[in-house]
Image (cartoon, rainbow, N blue to C red; front, side, top):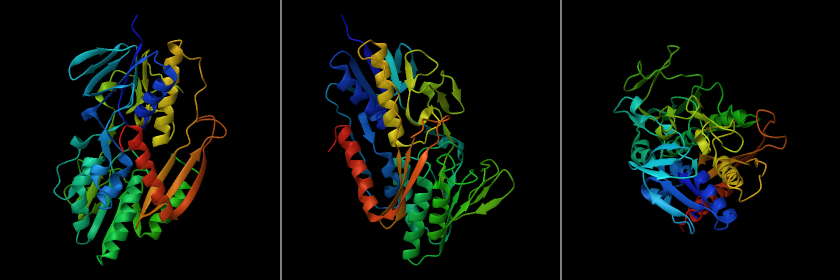
Length: 373
C-alpha cells in the first residue's frame, strides 16, 4: 500500500519548515516532495545588502537537499486538490502546501532608462552598480502598490543609500515613495513612528499617500493619481505584487488567497502559506515558517497520522538596515491571540552593529536548513 503524498511548492521559510515538520512528525508514514524553481533556495532578506554593495549574491542561495524529502527542480503552473502540474506534466498528491510568495509584476512598469525595476535578488544585483554611481539629484525608492514583500526593506535600502552617498560627499536626496499614510501601518505599535524618526535621522524623506500613476509617469518623473509629481535622477521601482498563476483558481482578496488558521484554502487538500496567504499577519520569515508547520500538522491530522493540534502563533522579527553595518529589529508577538481578535505586541531594538551580526546569523541558519553550509 502506497504512502500518502504531500507536494510542497516553494523553498522559502514556509516550504522548508513544512518539509522539516512532515519529515520529523510523519515518521516515515508520508511521502514528501518539495518543488522549487531551479532546485535552489534564496535568502531574500539579503537582497538589500546586495543592492548597497555590502554582500555577494552567491552567498545567499544554495541547492535544496533535505534528507527524507524528494527535492525537485521545476516550474509549477497549477495546484489543485489532486496535485500539481510541474513543467507541463501532471504530478498527483494527496495534499499540496503552496508557498510561492507574491510575484512582483515587473511587466506593468515601463522600461525607463532611469529606473531599476524588481524586488528580488536578481533586481538587487542589477541595481547595485547604478545605485552606487548616482552622481546626485534625487534617488527614489518607489513602492507602487500594497501588499508587497518585506515591508520594512525599502526604508532600510533608502537609509543605507543615504548614508553611503553622504559619506562619499555627494549631495543625493534619497526618498521613499509609498501609498501608505504611514510606514508599517500593518505592524502597528511604535513601528510607524520609529521608522519615520529613523528615516528623518538618516536624512531620508518619505513621500506618503503617493499612489503612483504608472501610465501618467515618465522617465525621470513620477506622478501620483492626486496630481503630485516627483522628479528623480534614478528610481528603484518596486512593482505592484500579484498572485502566482498557480493559485489562480483559489478564492482570494486581491492578490492574497483566503485561508483559515492552518492554511486551508477554498479547495480541499490545498494549503497556502507565506506572503500569498491572507492571514492579517506581517509578511515575515517566521510567519511563513510557522504557517508551514501549522499546515504540516493539519495534513498529518487529515491523514490520521497525528492528532489535531491548535495552530501555533508566530513571533516574527523584522531587521531594518540603517547603513554602516548597523541594524534595528522589530519584534512582534501575539499574547492575546491572532488578529482580528488579538492585537500584536511590538518591541523595537534600537540600531546597533550587534543586530547586523544577528541578521547574518539568520542567513546562515536558513541556508543550513535547506542543506547548505
